[in-house]
Length: 108
Image (cartoon, rainbow, N blue to C red; front, side, top):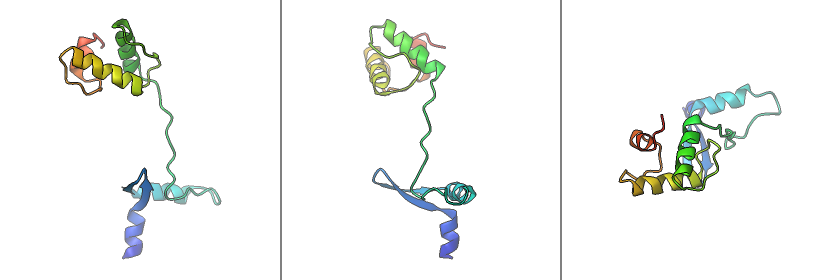
């Protein structure tokens, strides 16, 4: 029975938190060529992809006086500027691009 449970879940330690990953991670490990198997705690990081909406938000915030790198990536500076803008404009300060914030910034 333990073997069956081990096949269903792969348990890893990520950032100090115990996380149960789906069996797909184990399947990917089994599908890897011999000698190239990933360790069960190894997770491939995905490269951030610029987003047109985030870029438009950054441009709108820049016009409002916030100094941001307009690259389409939601980083710490963008999230901080977004929270500040939301608070200043009576919106819920979440740092997320919700509908109310996009409307206020006139971003579609």
